[in-house]
Image 1 (cartoon, rainbow, N blue to C red):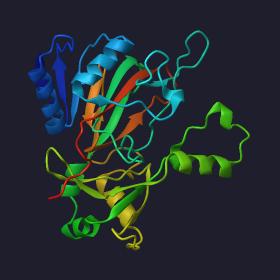
Image 2: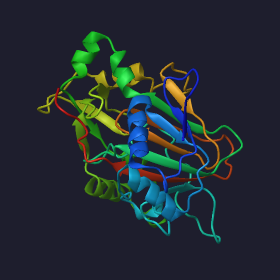
Image 3: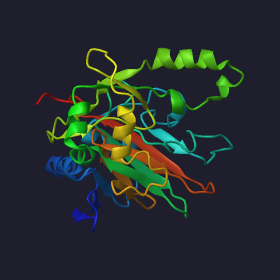
Length: 293
C-alpha cells in the first residue's frame, strides 16, 4: 500500500494498492488514523461488487442503511445509490443528490462517523465534491464569535432538501411536511462539538440542514448568529471560491472516505447532466458525536 499526501492541499491523501481482502488490521487502523488526521482518503482503482463494497465498509466500522428505501441498492440495502442511469429501463437510486452544504445524517440523533463514496460511473465534465474543514473553520473565528457559539445548540432538519418521491405527487404539502417531521423530528446537536478522537473543537452546522440555533436551555440567541457562522466558514459562498473550500476530485472506481464529524460537503454536478453513478456507505465507530473537554 502506497500513501501520498495531496500536493499543496491541507486535506486528503491518495492511497494506491489497497485491497480490503488482504489488508491486515494494522493497515485498516492506519487508514482510519489518516482519515482523522487528513480528513479525506482516496483509495484508488478499486474493483468492487456490491457485496465486496459492503465487506470493505465493515472493516472500517458499523455500516448503517439509509432510512429511506428509495436510495437502497437492489442487492445490498446498506448501499445508498445516487444515479441518473437506468437499469433494464428502471431508475436505480436517486439522481443529483447532495448539491448543498450538509453533514451526513446531521438531522438524525446519531450522525455518522465516516462516509465512503465509491465512484462507479464518472462524468467527463467538472466533477468532485467540495469540502470545508469545520475544525479549521472554528479555529479561524474571532474569539468573541467562538465564545458566542460555544454552549449553544443547532437545530437540524431535512425539510428543505427532502426528495419528492413518485407517491408524493398530488399530496398536499402540509401532509408531506407532517410526515417529514414525524419520521425525522428535528435533531439538536451542540453547535460546537469536541471531536471524540482528535479532541478539536469543531463547528457542527450546515447551510442546507441547520435551520436555527438556540441556547442550551432553549433561550433565544442574537439574530443572525447562525448566518455569521455560516458566512465565516465559507458555506454562503455560492461560487465556491472561499479559501476554506477544498475540491476533492476523483476518477472512476476511486473510493473516497472522509471524517463526517469534521467536514461539511457539497456535491459538484456537471452543468449538463451526464451519466453518473455513485455508491455510498455510511459508518458508525461506536464513539459519541462529541465529548466533554
